[in-house]
Image 1 (cartoon, rainbow, N blue to C red):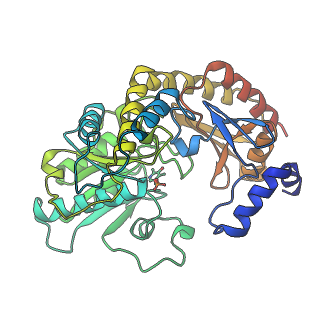
Image 2 (image 1 turned 60 degrees about the vertical axis):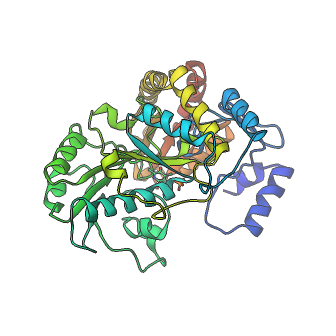
Image 3 (image 1 turned 90 degrees about the vertical axis):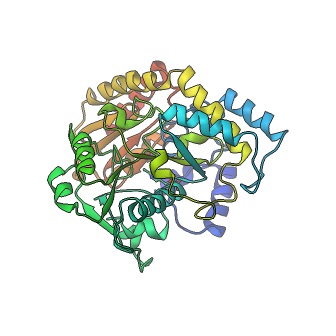
Length: 408
Ligand SMILES: *Cc1c(COP(=O)(O)O)cnc(C)c1O
């Protein structure tokens, strides 16, 4: 630890010190400061270059400052940036239409952050449960998964199974039931007449890149249908081509009744999130039921429209699929006593280390020293999630360093 801290040179040390002195202590960043970025590369104030293999937890699928997205940002900044929803703006309508076309859903609602979009989904799900399914008032139940990560609001952490996420933040919102992720019989047993939805991540990113068993999502969708409950995917981290498909559920063909998006929807430039669903479900919302001052602002909408076009035109889903397989093959070929399993989908990859290997953090710090940025998730998993614009050559560059780090 001391050694890596000392490696941070003058200006970086000063800037990191300011965060430590004046910032709430709710993060434990690697000891690096970034002052410039382009594509898959970032630079420190001292000019040291790093390959970004975290991509802001998959918000940077387009890479840093994608030229087309930056152009859309600059052009819209000269026109109008914020109107609130008290008035219409000329970007919101086209963005809604294009997002519905991209996702294949009938209606969308704009928010800003992922957590907000999950909260929005919960409100719509519950209202649908009372007004359409006719669940008795106050009785609606949403089934969620063990090891879930859906954000940090008080309602969302209330149904987390991670003790630290909840410790000291209660009392919590009732109405959630937890089942083991990947266990179809537990899900079946949890359903009852008051169940309004099953909320899940198609791959659990924060939990350590956990991929459910083949057929799980399809069977879960079928159970939801039998019980007239909504099948709701949180695609905030897995969406927008990250896993080798436009959305991760497409691997299994288990189409959600509702989908929650965020992160890469803003092209790595601005926060924007959304929920999409059918008219029948989204139609439960009336003026005044829900809202957001910045939600649907024309600057974020213009950026997001271009971000969506880039995903399609640069074939980033196909690239993520192909390069993800190549990267995982390369990782599996590394001869090391530390690796227990390499898993993932597309370019969302987890390398799980044996508990005896002393934790993933020290490997992330070693890789940082070699110019490669990644982050541990939980104790023993290293997550590799580079921008989807990465090439084979840069993956080879990374594999060489990962092999060297894992041999230590
Ligand atoms: C990041 C994330 C969220 C929360 O998004 P924020 O923008 O940080 O609020 C929710 N769900 C999943 C699956 C995520 O990865």
